[in-house]
Image (cartoon, rainbow, N blue to C red; front, side, top):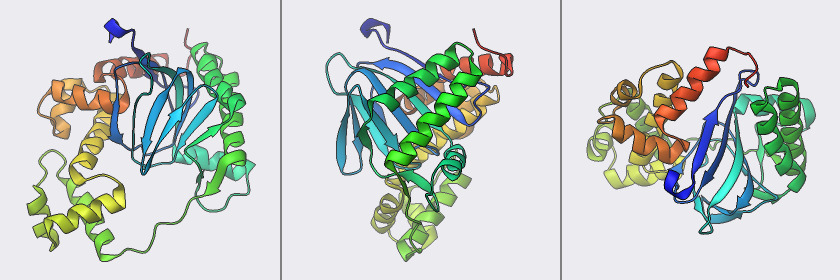
Length: 284
């Protein structure tokens, strides 16, 4: 990354449980299509980030806020040759639900109606959360974070639609997903998976993508990275985590992890170790 001036920090602030933070400059780096269990709230400071969503690509510039609901597949890359710098918050669905219940009248599962909005003052608040957390100012970081999320929910929030009743295809996709989770390290082929579920490979492929926005192999890679993150959170060395979740070796994990999380597994683990070592103390 050094040759093009790229840098990134993906970390947690002990005083803000349920929230991950990423501040970075990317030029050549690109994020492959993936999804998160929680929300993504991003504010570009310089340059342009092209965010590839289902059916559209949005151009994130300074003054905009990108809002991605849980489990929505997306990818991203630089929209201009000089790349982009940004601050991103990854709050858990539970954390956002609590803020929505306290500050809005949204019913059901709260989320966002649009992917990108012009909202310069809230974009500044997202950057301020990072600044306060990096200074170890827990009161400011927590306060500004909650103000930013509440403002986004009031201005751009909506009640997310409930999942539709399961069709035969949706049931097959859910069953396939369960089998892939069970056999994470040694998954069956698409043909074997379809045979076990009593369907055809192409029918399963279509159903899975319709239900989860990704083909089974791409979804499986994302799930392996999620599991690897949990292992790294617990202090597992990257090489061991790689094999445990089904990657052939650490370079294999490095490649996929970096293209989804934005940093290498080693950098991710070092930040986690630093967080847990402080154990709630202010970071310098």
